[in-house]
Amino acid sequence: MTTILQKKICLLGDFSVGKTSLIERYVYDRFSGRYLSTIGVKISRKSIELNPDTTVNMLIWDLAGSEEFSGVQASYLQGAKGAILVCDLTRPETLNSLKKYHSQLNAVSPNIPIIMVGNKEDLTESIQLTKAQIHEQAMLLNVTYELTTSAKTGKGVEEAFYELARRLD
Ligand code: G3D
Ligand code: MG
Image (cartoon, rainbow, N blue to C red; front, side, top):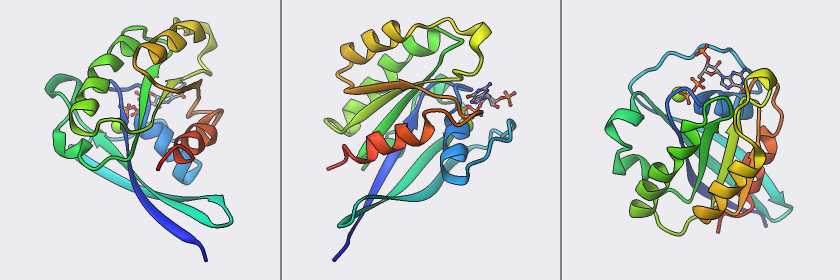
């Protein structure tokens, strides 16, 4: 018999790092490059078959709006079973911000699996963050897995969600 698990996961990171684009790539395999910044939360669903006995239904929460000004609302983080911290490889300050999101997350949903993503890897000319810097931040925050992605080309996106899904309890 197949067990189907429902898991809420949240994406966190500064405005414009590519959270919505990563979800669009993962769930619909598309990149449109323009998403209206609506106010509120959008929940997308995607299931992953982890093994023949276990399927995870991921409910992927995307926060639209001005999270970097107001801080993330506790209700967004409540009940999260996993999280993806996203920074933009072309903007070093977005890596630094992940500390703040991590502590907000920790206050509401402690000890859940978290992975870190450095997005926009396709913008090779403008990249200002090294893999070593991302690794260092991941170590500081006790994040067990980090990788670089491009929502535009799709590189690393499937892997990011899969690596999170297989760490969910
Ligand atoms: P957010 O949801 O974190 O706020 P969005 O970010 O997904 O809305 O993306 C913000 C901008 O970055 C968008 O461009 C989007 O197209 C772009 N973007 C997201 N991911 C990537 C990527 O991997 N590579 C490149 N080159 N661009 C990316 P606009 O122009 O609409 O601001
Ligand atoms: Mg968005």
